[in-house]
Image (cartoon, rainbow over all chains, first blue to last red; front, side, top):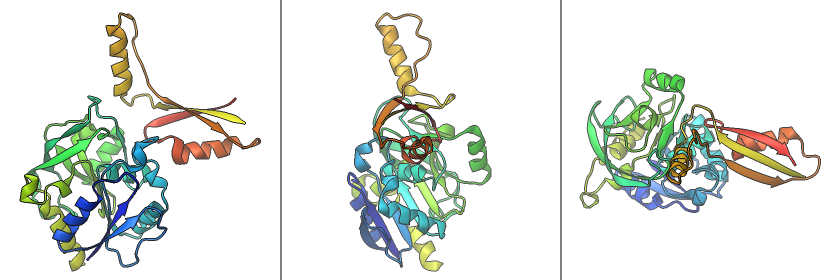
Length: 222
Length: 76
């Protein structure tokens, strides 16, 4: 199983994400944003957290225009798997691959702490290793994680089972307590919390392990 | 040719920053400020004759996130 992790100027969770994929059994390639094409045999693309391009204009807006991001859009249109975490989620919404937008936290503060997440949907390769309703503890570290969608879109996401996680105690004002959403074809996940920061006992928790493991298993089995 | 683009959050999208500014004005003793909305101004220096459609394209593709923001173009 081959995973690629995109690296933008200002990405800072790229190596953590690579380690999480490697621990789960994937071969990982790091891909600089100026590359125009993803390696052809890639199974999944990870868009890491950080502050790509210094969060200029809007978080993720400049990265969404990088050469490699065009290739990422083509990859997802072909039905390829992708995961965007934190700034990676912001990049995925800015490209339009995932719906909605991430705004400044309602309390205007940068929030950096473990939060409670409830697994809302397991009918996807990312979360099949959890049970629906299961509560996890996963760290967040963001200033702009306030997920915003219209009521109409929220209803659609609910009815299509595309809400991956909700916060048990909403830290940032997100609509519908949403912490992560899935694409229509269920192959792309975007989430603000950092599962790659809880894959080792030394991280203080291992609730993220099952995500990377079930993802690798699903892709290998496919 | 100078062009000014005003980017504002759409009506109905909560603006926590504007709200914080409103509170701060109240704390300074400015009464009666009922609402504050905060946006951004982007000034462009573009080739003469650049069409409004091209500027709109720039706004739709990059300068504004039309999921949450509106923009207004003004040729100066």
